[in-house]
Image (cartoon, rainbow, N blue to C red; front, top):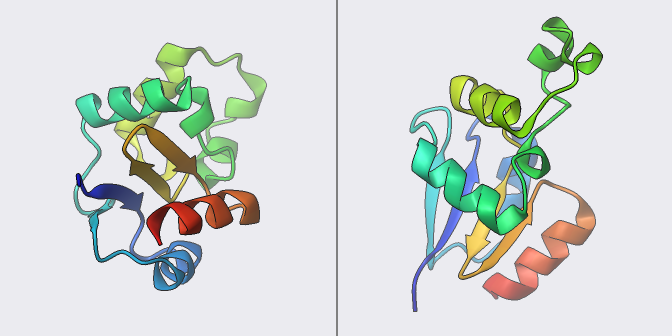
Length: 117
């Protein structure tokens, strides 16, 4: 069985809490601060997610600092921003086979937990 992949931020308390509650024995963990997500990885997970926007975090401090809420962002913009700045990537992102779980909502966490157990 292919290993699941988890893109996370090691210094993020929410990511740490989620990872501590998941069975990650059969997972490859990638801390996006220390090992940047590659364009190919981002393209692959965006395809699973249905769009780059689905992976984009509007909670990032830089989202406000750069006044991005006042701009009409395109898929190309979302991709560029996430590749330039890891904080724009929602996290954690868990890829297991053809399934993807994005972010830290309770619903996503529960689905990912069932999948990984």
